[in-house]
Image (cartoon, rainbow, N blue to C red; front, side, top):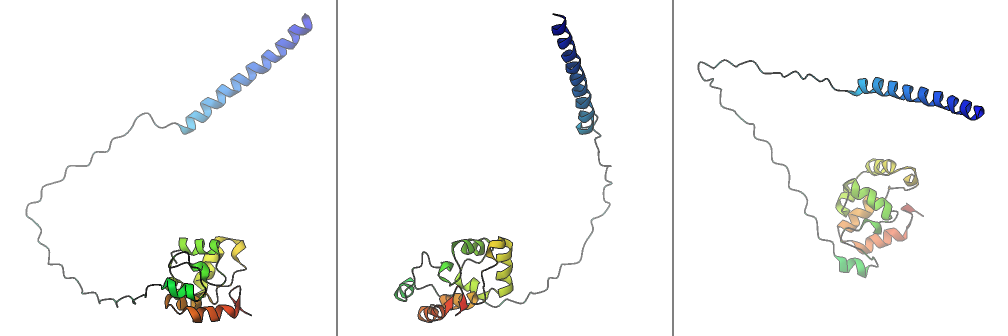
Length: 174
C-alpha cells in the first residue's frame, strides 16, 4: 500500500507542475495576443466654413490619338481544318500545334494566350517564360515554331500548316 501511495504522490506532483506551467504559459501568451481594452476614438477637428467659393480654371483635356483598329481576325474554318487532317476540339484548340499538349495548352490559356492569333503574336521569350513559370517539367518544350504554326492556323492555311508539321518533330525541324 505504501508503494502505491508513493507512486501516486510522485504522479500528483508532476501533474500539479504541468498544470501550473500550462496556466502560466496561457496567461503569458494571452497577454501578447490581446487587444487593448480601451479604444481611442479619433474625432476630426471642426472645419471652418469657407467664406467664398473657389473658382477653378476650366479643365482642358488633350486629345489622345486614336489607336489603329485591331486587325480583322478571320474565323477559323473548321471544315477546312478537318479536310487537312486536323481534329480540332474547338475553334482555337492550341493542341494541334506541334509540341503543345493539353498541359501546355492549359498554361497558355491561364496566361491569356487563348487563340491562334494570340499565339502567333507571342514571342519565343514570352512563351519560354510561361513554360518556366509552369515548372521544370515544361523545360523540354521548345516554342521556336509555335508562333509560326499559330499564324498559319489563324490565317486558315491548314495545308501549309500540315506541310510544316510534317517537317517537325516535337515542334523542331527534323
